[in-house]
Image (cartoon, rainbow, N blue to C red):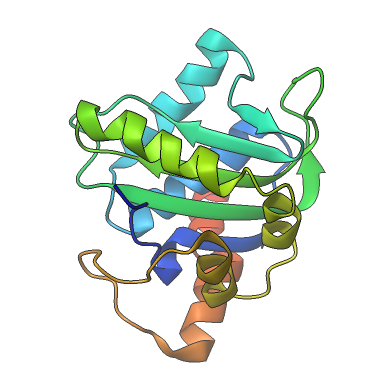
Amino acid sequence: MPLPPLPDDAVVLGASASSWREALRIAGGALVASGATTEPYTAAMVDMVEEHGPYIVISPGLAFAHARPGAAVLRDGLAVVTLAEPVAFGHPHNDPVRVVLGLAVAEVGTHLESIGEIANTFNDPTVTTRLASAASAAEVRAILGVAASGAAGAEPSGAAGAAGAESSGAAGSAEADS
């Protein structure tokens, strides 16, 4: 199963986060903005780390935020957040985090397949660094090998609209919740 599409609304570049919780709220906000999830999914991602620790920091600089499939997942979705300044999640070897990848899957059976696809993508040790320095949603999609569309409500918004969504869209809503 290929990774879900990555619409512009699901990409936030150069976000400011003062904590790992805020970084996850930004990723969750991007999933909500893209129409993949509702707000409770964001809370569930934070709860997973509070309950199980920073296991989502899967390699140096990369956090893979997710929660269990459930009613808060409207459809499969992917979000990518790059942080202007790295944030500590408390992982003994892979902190600090510069890239947060958010994943939502609607069905349990596809959950493991999607995780496998992500693992394959990050077998290339340069992917996290390239994502951290990406300048556009299109560049992020090229690095990950995913499409922009296939997502309900995802349509091109032009360069100015895309830049606004990348720099402040989901991050603004996450900061308001802080």
